Image (cartoon, rainbow, N blue to C red; front, side, top):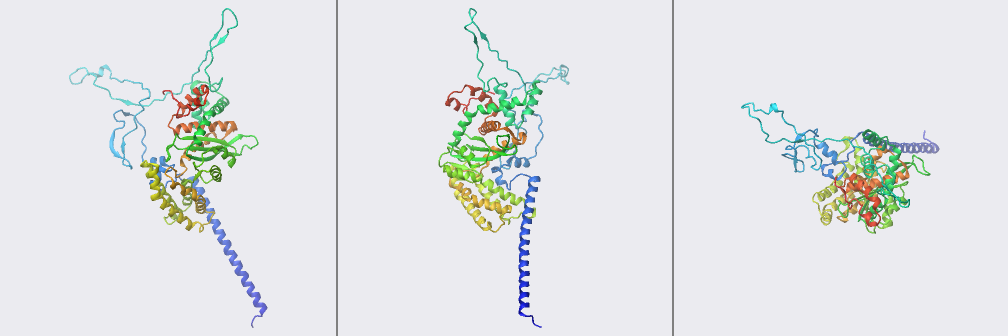
Length: 537
């Protein structure tokens, strides 16, 4: 019996409904698979972040251009325990060579000849200075020398200031008192050298104030209040503001400036919860980079926000046409447009996204056919050009020619690979995020080949900001806004000293002694790290 028209239509509608339901289920299944893969990728990323090595190295040709050169060198050599050697053995050449073809010397390096030395002479007793063969008395023909390091615990002493009073023996109208030398903290408890020690220990060595108080108590038997030490550090950080202002003037006048920021927590900030995150902005110039102009400067500035308004105050005054190197944070785009700057993107940041994508893959899937692996290899070729230019100390003109000859072609290959995979990968995946970051940053990333003075990455600024991040693990937070600003100023001085290869403690001790005597702009200019006259060690 043939079905009626009504039955046939009903059957047809049922089949269409089943087909629609099947298509819907298939679509949901695809979505679930994608979500599953994204979750597995996020889990793999988290596991790698928690338990795997932090190194981003993927080849020896890039080892000198990233942060992990110390780890790479340590892994390549067997560390030997330090031991006493004779002076003749120190630096003895065995004729061996390292991987770069340079001769390596045996043993530890010679001890600094400037260190004070105490000679301890070891002689044979009289009874052993007799020749066993003929009974003659042995005579001295020389000495065999070996040296060891001895550490003398720090000493705490009190400087007693006695201000002599003078008076006329005939009347009461000529009473006079000898003045006390000017101090960076009037009536302060600590001398200039003691303040320099406290600040260097806190900000350079990561030693919190309570540990310093314990050390000083152990050395000198003095019970010092941490509040007194903290208040002294804050007042010194405020007193050095004229030097920070001069450093900022030099930085804003530099042809190339690096910018970055990191989190900091301030507990007692008006109108904000103690858990609120604030930020420490970092700015720097790199006198040793391709541009190589002027002494290197490292500046930190505190701000309660990460917004454009905070950044505008820090970058106000930059020269039109100068260069700003930053990561992909949008605020830097606004700063560059506002001040008409040449804005460069950071290839190290871009590469990091692809590193994360590769690290989240199973080890067996990290093959050369993977797009993330291909991007890392091509970026490595860009860094190979930079490494070669750095090793040969090329001038900016020669570096530009090398980039035009090699890097431009590599950039074209990277861009072609980007366009191939940009819309073929799930945007929320690690590879998708890497591709979209590169696509958004491409004009800034590809701009470095236009000039031999332009840097390829942001690494110098990240290296400068790292001591702050490491120190933050010790002190965790700032108590007040004044403390955060003081910390920013003192970090700026310490990191600028290190960038100029000046011993921070010696500079701070000299600065704190001379700063109260400065009156004019020229006086303050002569107190900059590369201008000040340091006393002999």
